[in-house]
Image (tube, rainbow, N blue to C red; front, side, top):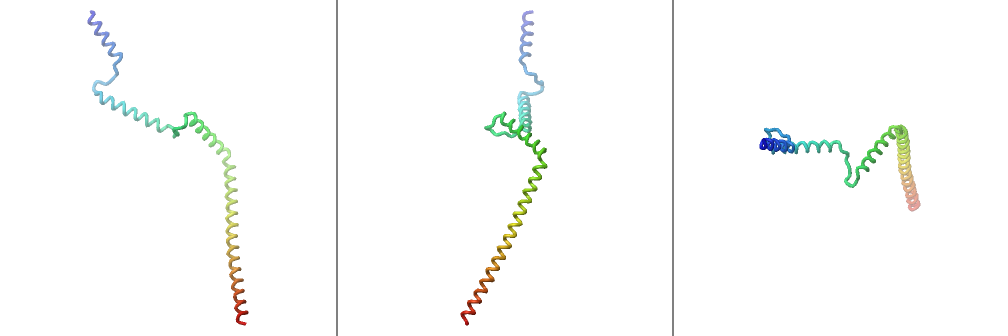
Length: 131
């Protein structure tokens, strides 16, 4: 009786600490499977993780994400206002461009006038010199 009881206790003890494994798998196969599962889990966590900078804490990242969400909401609300502002800015820019074009044209005209006056002056001097 005692021997049987001891054997049963040993079996119970062994079962308590034994890892459930399939009988046809080797230890190497179990390790491979566990490692691949760990790698897959790591890949999944990286897919869903937010890009974070190493010096930032988790709290900072959450704040940043929340502020980005709030900004998007504000953009939706004030999108039309921003669009109007952009249109105004584009109009100002086009007016400035037109003025620059006019300025270039007037500069070219002034250069032509100066050249004409110089040629007239040179002709006058030549006339005086020959007369």
